[in-house]
Figure 1 (spheres, rainbow, N blue to C red):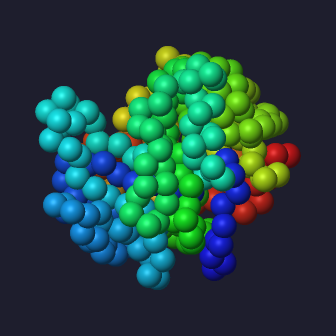
Figure 2 (tube, rainbow, N blue to C red; figure 1 turned 45 degrees about the horizontal axis):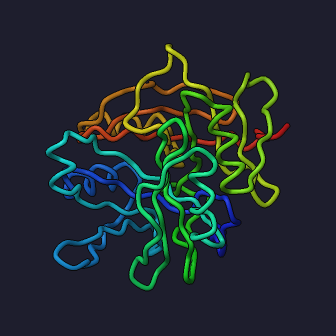
Length: 263
């Protein structure tokens, strides 16, 4: 399969999981997605890099003690590539959002900030200092899609347009579901939350590509995962939404190769 060599400004580029049980998460996701863990020391703790074919796919790390004490649920974090993290972060407050963590260096790998949109949806901005964080693409175990379920989708779209200079395209037959566009390509989805939608641990949901959605579902549920949405077919493919044993929500999808997200 081809490997990614770059991510255009405005494209989700990395994910990591803040959890209460790193060892449990390594085992759970490894069994479903074929990941192999490599624990990288970071001062007094470590960052568990998840790999497929020795290519970085995702990270897993332990929640801080104060986060555990406050009852913060484990959750997957989405990082969006930016050309200049200082410039992008400076646009957050004027656009109605909040800066949770000002830009800081992550060793010699990149520079990041953590922000929230006007609805409170949290995402990280990432300026790489070298190779892309997730070179694995379009195969089992890779990230397939990132999606924001917003309590005010128009407000979230306007915010992301202002901060990231992205655009948004509607999807024929998908109601108000829109594709966030960067570099001329669809890079994420944005949808309005309704009362009928299931609750997840974070507004940003990550989809992992799997060869067989039903097999991944069975593996997840037999390993302690719980069901949010059972396997079902939609135009982009067959998917399911689950929670891992610690409570972090995620989705798996077997893509439909005939589907075109922009008509």
